[in-house]
Length: 273
Image (cartoon, rainbow, N blue to C red):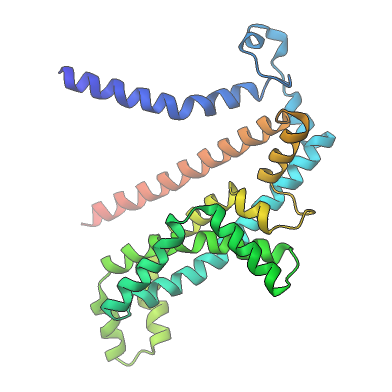
């Protein structure tokens, strides 16, 4: 009995540590002061929607929204490229000889363990050496290099779990390798592909180091904007509290929808069985 109570208290305490900052962020998105003070909450007149209005109409809000659009653009484009390249890389690694597969897997894990600053510096030196000017393309390469290993790691377990006999049977029945790949392998590893895509988007959204080293100064993302503004003003713009609160709510809604739809699919499968 005591162990159960202790376990529940520990779980609730860990959940509190994880979600308290997010809850406070949402609460203070309705307070338009530059600096956060808990005493503000006891003043009823201070609760308003001014930050949300300024986000879409104010000067700072326009810059923040544009930075968010740029961040979303590079995240989605790099995630698509990383998912395509990572999927074919994972399939190629899986069907390689055993010794080569281990070597490839080891090589794919090095960028994950490597400090991000080393990757950023290496890419910067490479671009300067080749003579490429920093632009959206160099930023895209940086984000793809960052996220591809994680896509591969998401897909490889699904390849190991799938029934490879179906693929071999399709080849024996006359299907071309490309046709068997599209009809047999891709559908079986699709959950891993989707997981890799979502992970790539997440990693790209909050990246700062590689973005700062590989971007053009005219292309501003949320991470570089926050760093630049904080360095100049000494404080984070209040409108960012409103933007991040919106992102949190949208993310929560998407997560609930995904869990709801996947739960319905599991229930249908259970009924069929």
